[in-house]
Length: 559
Image (cartoon, rainbow, N blue to C red; front, side):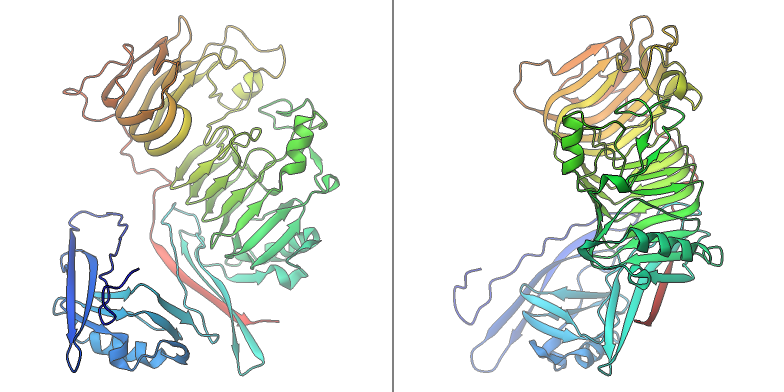
């Protein structure tokens, strides 16, 4: 940033990303200037945004007004406490704001106040003391009956010898706060990226599962590189990955045991017969959570993709996370990378929330689906960022006659049953082949035992509020001759289509309506802008809707 004069500071712009979540909340923008006199005049200026009825703050002060010293060494714990205490006396008179100017401001914990803004200027750094770090808690309100853990795991030293571990997280639903919390290091875990932690994970889950029915249990994976083979979870259990924690899938194929194929598939997806076990597994569990402070699960995919490409595998590749016959599931606030195949696979499960996760795989990687709910009910997927070599999200229900036993939902001939009442909204898509793709010609079959007369019924599919960039085609909609897909509704969609020889819309054997869609849809999905003001979306209070949060905390002396 350039300065026009040494005694003046250029006005900084605060860019505030705001999510409007409730009615009656307005957005106000404002600024407040402060002048200091005495010798050369110095102008302090701050531009900021304000939300709500109180708008711009009437009372503004700097941390330096309360003795703050931004040298990175002097403690400002008292300065923050005094500043908040004094400003809190005037906050009810149109609010107050404490400005932390440029500098390094060492401090212990401090509280905020009602109608209060904490403003960090450019080059301002609040440094947490080694006595106790400040907790920054990111919380997602998710599903009824599901315990949610979000937050930090941190350490502090007191008196030079004792070291304290502290965990802060939030819980929602009947599971509530976990009564029993342990670290992977308590069970011999070593986070050096080389030592195997397969035994440590197994011991941790086995021991915590003994007490999980007494208020639930949580295993914390602290910062580090934790190499491991596959392991199972337990009932009433939270797996929490701290910031900078990375679970590394072992490259030793001997640790990936062979398990039976899924009954709704009849065989493995990659090859006939069984399949390799999945990295993180749960079977017939209730109240299971995989979450963290954006820790990472890394499948270390290179050997798997190479063996698959060279046709060296005799069994189907495993997934990063598979939960079978589970209910009350939450997966949130973690990052998944480099999966051998699919990333998240809840199968034969119910009441599943996947919220706020990131999934990354090269776009040319084989079958690295993001999230594949399979033969499951009451599944909610929200606020996720997915880059995949295949489907980002795919709703599955097995294969042909095997999947029919689990309420088949695929759309090709030979799979029968129905796909209906599918509602999709609020998507942002980047670099896609198609914005919308439906096909009745998906021709893969596990064997020749499928029934060619089993024709699926596909109807009532709604898409709303979609923005897509850098796409090859707006849509490829291919129904089944003699059994068209019906009841399609597309509303408020904008697609940026790149120049291509392919048609922008390709529609056959489909019927529906559209409104406010760009580019103009095909003739089979005609526009009715005056008649269609929205597409259907369920208004029922579903079992996976949000409930209130309970804030939880845990601490202990570190062993």
